[in-house]
Image (cartoon, rainbow, N blue to C red):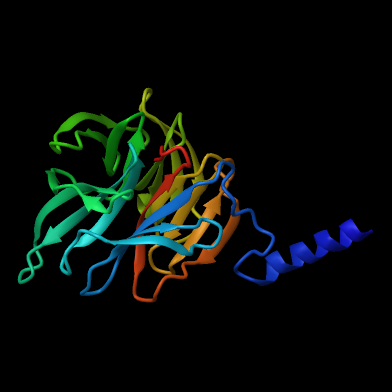
Length: 259
C-alpha cells in the first residue's frame, strides 16, 4: 500500500509541475553537460553543468563577438569544440564561420580556424569532427578547417544540433516547421528514425550514454529525452543568469570522451 501511495504522489507531481521531481535526469555513467550561450549585444559563455539540475561547474567566455553568434558544440579528445559566426558590426553581413577548441583542464583556447559552412551543429564521431548544413553532413579537419568528406542523407532533413550515440548520428531537424530528432546512419546515408522534439526551438543536442539532451533556445529549457519514442524523461529551466540563451550542447563522460 505504501508503494502505491508513493507512485500516485509521483505521478501527480509530474502532471502538475514543469520540473519533474520524479524524473530521470541522471546519466547512466555520470559525466557533465556542456552548453554554449548567446547574449544580446554581449559575449556569451561556454558552461560545464551538473546535468541533474543545470548548475554551473565551470564557465568560460564564448568566442563569438557581440555582433556574431555561437552555434554548435562538441566534446572530443578532452577538448570542447565550439563553432560560431562573425558579422560586420556596421552592415550585419556575415564575415566568416569558425571553430576552435577550449581545454577545460587549463582554460586555454585554440586559434580560430575558418570553415566553409555554418557550424550550427557539431559532433565528435569516432575521433572525427562532424558538422551539418541541411541534409549535408561534413567531416571537418579541426586543425585546418578543410572539408575532408561530405555525404547527403535521405530523406531530406534540415539539421541543427548533432550528437553521436556510439553507432548513429542524431540531429535536431526543422524540416517544414516540423521539429523532430532524427537518427542517421552515416554508412547508408539514410535517416533511420524520427521522434518528435520536446520543444518548438530545439538547437543543441547531446548523448549521455542512455538518452538524448535537447535545449530550447527561446524558453531556456533543457530536456532529457528517450531515443526510443521521444518521451521527456526530465526537464528544467536553465538556472544561469537571465539574458543568456542556450544554443549548442555537448556531453563529457568521466573518462574524458564525449560527443
